[in-house]
Image 1 (cartoon, chains in turn purple, red):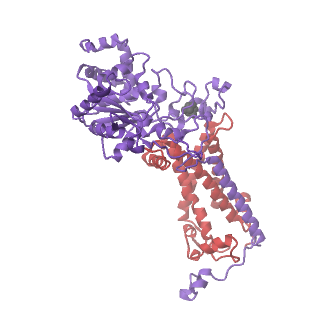
Image 2 (image 1 turned 60 degrees about the horizontal axis):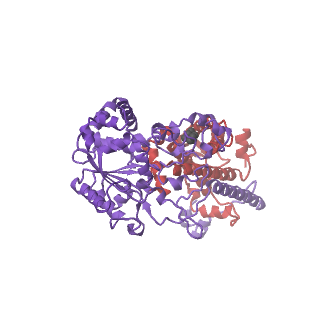
Image 3 (image 1 turned 90 degrees about the vertical axis):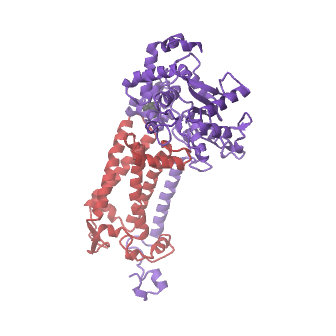
Length: 408
Length: 210
Ligand code: SF4
């Protein structure tokens, strides 16, 4: 690499990134990682140091996916800082955009894994499709399950990028409709990396970054934290300090700790009760809250409003679309319909029910039953003094009242 | 007097919680969300405190063991199964379903009555629990997050936690369950005569006795 001879900032300049841009970027990273702004220079020097030293080995593997996360991370429009940072990794294998092909690519993958056993990062994109014994996806004559087990067990840590890698994403959702019209279990039996590895007793730490697709800055932040700020130590062990930054689902708390709703620029309108009830309405033009048109911001925990998307240009709610909750688990099934408040709930049932309708029916039946019962009581002449009191409990009558005098 | 106050507070709390809850569920008209949430929080605390006070009182005050008697006992004992309730549950079900003509012997409250009244206590606490799991300031507390995780897992979110959808729906259903038992409660308590209602709404005791 000719660029190696240049200083770090010269390298950046050469790619159209000023020093100022870079420092600003480091500031953002402190926000994502939940550090104080004062840590920005530390990040800058860590990145600078890492760029000067040998590259940190990494491989990027694909499961059942749409490559949206690759697109998101690649952000091809211009070579921005995130791409350059990824150059700090020695990304030896990446199915979608790797230069080498066939045997060479395979060689690179396996060499990285065996020569750096326990000391490289595996970035996994896409779902783990366990259906048909993993034969839904075969690469280099191996099922994706075999490859994941083999490479995953050797990695120091796995970054599961995107909802698919985290819990199966849309690949595990239920639109695989069969002839009778009812949703059936999807054939792919897709699941996430952490669940699959757990089922195989492989305990490589997994960092989960759900969202569809993943936000590139989160990936970069995780790489900075894990690789450059010492989250993974020299022996390839994830440090306790780093592990404590993840929640029980393996997500970085600093990214997934608050709801979108709590940081939403439209939140004031929500509290004022200023809502968009219809697209194309004056309320929409006024930028009111999108809750009635199905915004899932109140139950979705990501920092999208803070970090934003596409080079910080904007993000869903800001650009006028209700949040569809793609940062949630099982988000397709759980959050449909995307543009409405009411939803049918499966709750483990094959045929989903509408909760409002179900509740109305059950409630109505109960009230009607009570009313009917009331008329019955009246007809039986029990209103007022009530029916004549029995002389003795039935139980006592049957079991012989003499026995210890019965209950009473 | 405590009887009347307790019922008023509960009735108002339930009314306001249901209405504001339904509004939060879907804002049918604009301009009210902040208020609805405020109302929901206020009555939620009121309802819980009211219930806790009631439970504490149950261990201190005495209440009549039967209507029209002066015999009294520590209140909570009238709620738990008593000697007179033994073996009578089936009889009561038969009686309510018109299979039995005579009024079964019972304590002040019959078995089915006790059950349907008592179940509102855990239900109310459950509504509060699921509510706190949804409420920003408390949703991260491990105690509430555990519930979120449980329902997310139960309803098939796979990896689970952090998915508020499941617990949201459970919170909503709990409301219907409470309303249902309230309807049963109001019905069973008033089926022979409207004395209890007269007392609550008009502050009048029936001095004719039974
Ligand atoms: S647009 Fe969505 S996230 Fe924003 S305030 Fe409204 S409901 Fe909340």
